[in-house]
Structures are given as structure tokens and as C-alpha cells.
Image 1: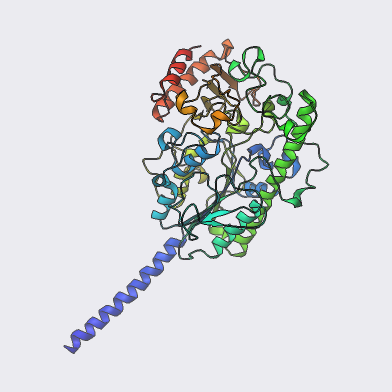
Image 2: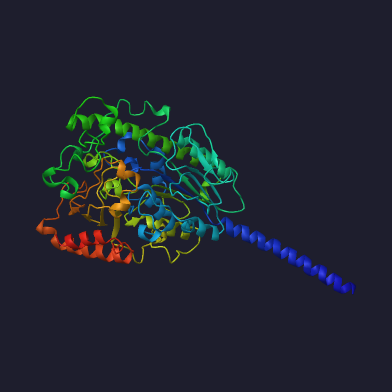
Length: 533
């Protein structure tokens, strides 16, 4: 009997010993999973980052991001599939295109069960958090922690919805300061107080530099005496566009596309800040300088706060095992074609910055030309965390590229669609594809909702009763020879073979990605009628 008791005691000792060993092994294995900080600004164009070059690169606007790119990987060809906040953010979270995740425009909510990225990362053992701009309307319930701006939020003294502070959406907390500073403070505080037994995934979302741009007062003197380089296309581009973007004989130039200059009859940047009646080049110059200085001061605030976050990670010995990603939810028109805001499929609006830092995997100073879109972000993050891309995601992981390898199979063109038509910034509805060297766009110029349903929305009472159908036309640009997209070559005989190939690619992707108009017969009829124009 005694010997049996001793045997049981020995077995229990062995079991305890083994459980401790396995626990240590588990912790070590877990520690190998990198922390992931996904930093996203709002409307930060890639050409407003020094590392991307261009006319603004010498303004010293982003030294911290430039350093991050030099120590990591800069992706040159990253694009959104819908250049507007809510749909782009939905594609990033879901790894899906708009008709699949059902977020077509600013009015749609992302269903809580489709908050796929935090759901998948939690399965892999991560603690998850989102801080800053959310803009997907429903509560971010699948994050372990959230502190998000209600809707667009405020630049100064923003309020937040915070998990653990009551029931959504009444769980409001106040703050003091500029939003970029406050959001970074909250991110640092979260990392300090995190569950240190698990890796963390943090979505750090700035409000800036969303318009109208309000910067912290300390940046008032930045660029005060600097003449900001201007895009030539803001003044002169006789071969750009089509009737779908200009109207017949330029009859819609004062209606389509809100302007930097006094061009647009309802919404132009000039009239917001100047009281006289200037138009043309003089109004463009004055308002562009104001627009860009305010915008870049907001950008400078983002860059400084990223530097502050990186310094904190160094101090806490977290930098070595932390992946840092920097991007924006889309690009931004910075005066090109005399446009403000985004929404367009033109390069400056469709292109997203994307910088990744992870010395364990990435060789410093690497540049990638891979054709990526925002549905690829979630699959890549999941695989970096040690998981596999879920079959329900339409995007693809580019982890091989990050590792310095070649992707076995990859897209040759990326799909884009803007759904809303005219509302907010008078941009006509359109879709298209962009390949490495070419871009094909179709402006179908009609809202997808039936007219009676369309009128129920607030914008029907806002946009001067003129949310009218616009001309249905094609545009084609040779990006290799015309990177500024100033010459529409759609009717040029020399490009007809390429255009035909891109139309086939467009048709194929619309079908494969569930992006057709089978549920919108009026648009489907327009597409069919004008496909061979």
C-alpha cells in the first residue's frame, strides 16, 4: 500500500514537471509569434511620403516613415479597390471585395460576423485591439479591446467609444489634445497594459489627414515660407478625360469633380477660404498652397507620432519582434486634374502607400513592384502570424514577397469600382482594371440604387437636386509613357489590341470576384450597351 502511494506521488511529480516543461515550451513557441502593429492614416497619398519620391519629396514631411522604409520594405504598386473610407476599410478587415462583404459605399455597415481579421488572429492566440478611426458603424465586438472615434471623429479633443466603459454606442469617453497625439497616447497605453503572455495585434488608425485639415498648432510654421510644387495637370490638360468626366465640349467641367480652383460651381476649395471671385490659374494657385500646407502639416503630425511610437517600442525592447505596417485607407487627389479629395480611379487616389518593417524577415531597403490590393492585407497578416489564408477571403497573401521569394501565381491586373455617383464630391460612378503599364476605366455614370430608394437618402436633398446620370464613356491610359494620366488614348488605333485584352480581363474579374451588375439591371443595361463603344 505504501509503495503504491509512493508510486502515485512520483507519477504526480513527473506530471507536474512535464506540465511545467510544456508550459515553458508553449510560452517560447508563442513568443516566436511576432507582435503586429498595423498603422493606417486616412487619405494619406503615397506621393506625400518622401520615400515614394515625386514633386513633394524634398519638403521633409515624413522623415520617420522614410527611415522606416529604408530599414524595411517599400511597396510601390499597392491599390485600393474602392477609394473611399468605409468600403476600403471593409476590404482590409474581410479580405473581400465590396459585393461579397456587402459594403459598397458610406451608408453600409460591416456585419459583426465579418470582422474576419481579428477573429482569425484570436484563433492564433493573439490579443487584438483597434484604436482610432473605425468607420464601419457596427461595434468592433471581435476585438479584445477597442477605443474608436464615433463616425469620422473630431481633430481636437476627440471623444471615443471605449470597450468596458458601457454599452455601445453610449460608451463615450473624452480626451484632450489633437487626435493624432491622443490616438498615439492610447496605443502606447494599450501596449504598456497588454496581456504580456500573448502576442498582440494592434490597429492604430489616425484620423489625419482627412479633410478639412486641422493640424496641431505646433506645426503652424512648417512650410509657412515654402512654395509647394504644383502639378501641371491642375492648369492644362487638353487630352485628359472624356465626356464622362468633362461633358460634351467641356459642358460638365463646372459640375464633375470638386475642385482646388474656383472651377466647380458648388464645391471648390477656393471658395472656402477666399472671399473674392477669382477663377482659373490664380484661384488654383492660392487655394492649392492653402490646401497643401494644411494637409502636409497634418501629415507631419502623423510622422512625428509614428516616431514617438517607435521610440517607445525600442525602450520596451519590443521592436525586434514587432512587425510594423504603415498604410492609408486610400490615396488622395492633391491638385492633380484640379481635383481635391479621392474616389477616383486615377493614380493619386487609387494608389495606397504600404511600408513594412520586420528585420527578422525583411532585408533593409527592399522595394517591391508586386501588384497588390487591399484585399491582400488580411491574408498576409494572418500568414505572418502563423496561420493560413481562409478560403472565404478573395485576397491573396504576399508573404513570399516579404521573405524575398517569388510568388508562384499572381494577378496581372487589379480591379476597382466606385459606386456612389456624384454624391459628396461629384464623382461619377465607374469601374476598371489597372495592369502594370495600363489602365482602363468605364464611367457608367448612374447610381446603383433605384431612383425612389435613392431619394430616401440624405444626399438626395443635399446635392442641389442634380445627382443626374452622366455620360457613359471609356478612358485608357498608358501609364509607362504617361504616368500623370494626361492623355486618354482610348480611341488611338495603336492601343486597340491592348484595350481589347484589358476588356476581357475586366469581364473575367468582374465575374470571378462577384462584382457584376446582375442585381442592378439598369446599370447592367448601360454596360452592355456601351461595352464596344
